Image (cartoon, rainbow over all chains, first blue to last red; front, side, top):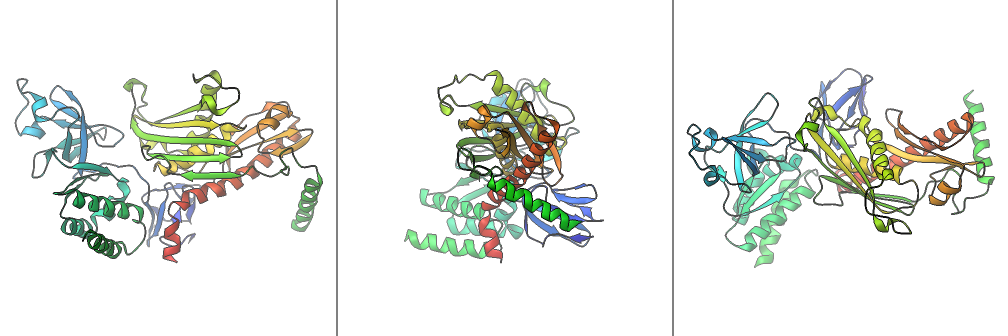
Length: 230
Length: 251
């Protein structure tokens, strides 16, 4: 009937976190009355639930997530998009051009195989296949910039509380940064220096995401980078 | 009663140290030097590199991703696919790079040893690929592959019930020894590779190459499990090392 770790301790799959009655939260499982971790991460004890904040985890799609993907296939009336999930996402024609599907339209003109696309998950179907949409502001095919990859579990740290971290990076570097919840990041700056700076900062966030006081350290880091440039 | 147990234990340990050392200078219950590193391949979802004695093995994990061809996907759970491969230069004389019957078998054995520890039911219709490439072989590669594959799976963020630790024990010149090298493997009477889930206390792999009396066999298994527990500690350290800064910073 007790917690076997302290909150925010690093735990490894199989570690017994709690013995007794408690609800199992994210990345935990119960076996033989004990609650164990199932991913590497930081343990979190609440009053009635124990969970693990994963440090390594794949992307699990949720409705409303903004994702960046690559078009891998064109079928009749839909595109298949790779968004790093266990199953490819589907983008149907009505979700792309706001008009019903018509066999006469040239789908490759809207999105071709190999195109990078910023999309939103509007639904998960019965088999939990993500359904995408590119209707909306700042969604659709990407024509410029470059992509970076991050562990999807660290995306919340990169965004920060109410977007504080990403806004800071946007303001200080002057780059346009689009963050997909699936761990792909689109960066587009006016100059190469700006883009390099953004990459350095994002790498720092990835490496130190699990250490507290991240925002202030990144702020300091940005200041140093700016001084170096001068 | 507990006191008596302790004294008997002491006796056996002193007896073992008196026995002759092995050809590479190890004690009977000593592991080879073991080094594991996680996240070594940037393009894989998870990866690990292991050096177990002179074994050098690289493991990459990809997935969960879509199964191709689709009809092989299981509708209720993910498929785990392990590929074991020995590089042509991993042994002397050079071996053919084509996958041999032995490679396929060890891949299957790895699969069976790791599968019980993975939450496959969380990713229906998909596949998790584990590629183990033996760069240098020195006996006991299957156990080393399983050790590295576990670390790589955790690094890939795949939910696991427990870590899988694996180690062999065997008999050479009538003496039970732990973690056999290539020479002992070939010259010894028998070897018993074991894969073990330390937290759950379950054996997921148990093979025996050779013939042993039941008493000796159970002793071998016990010794191998002992080795697995030691290896488990090193696996945990390898996984924690990547986040090493965190513990110091927080304290």
